[in-house]
Amino acid sequence: MAGVAERVQKYRAGLRKAGMRPLQIWVPDTRRAGFAAECRRQSALLKKDHQEKEVLQFLEKAADREGWTA
Image (cartoon, rainbow, N blue to C red; front, side, top):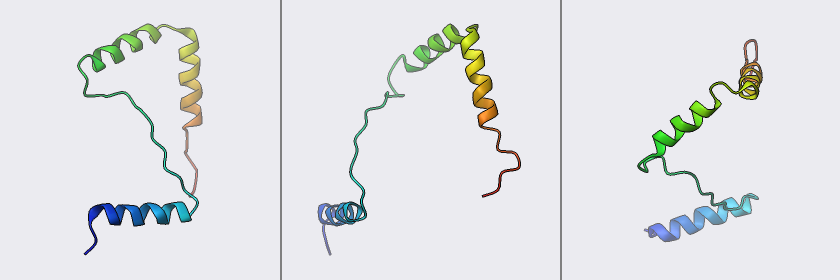
């Protein structure tokens, strides 16, 4: 039976053969102390922003999928 590293290498080789490439991204750590407080702070800054209201209205219209078929 192949080891984990060998299976992963084989799996990744298959993905590369299919035209894929690996990509690493860095995202905020939602477990970090203060993360939720910072989200609330940023949301409060946008609460009365006129442009933010326009953006949210646009997103709501864009997300309207009523009547769509797959």
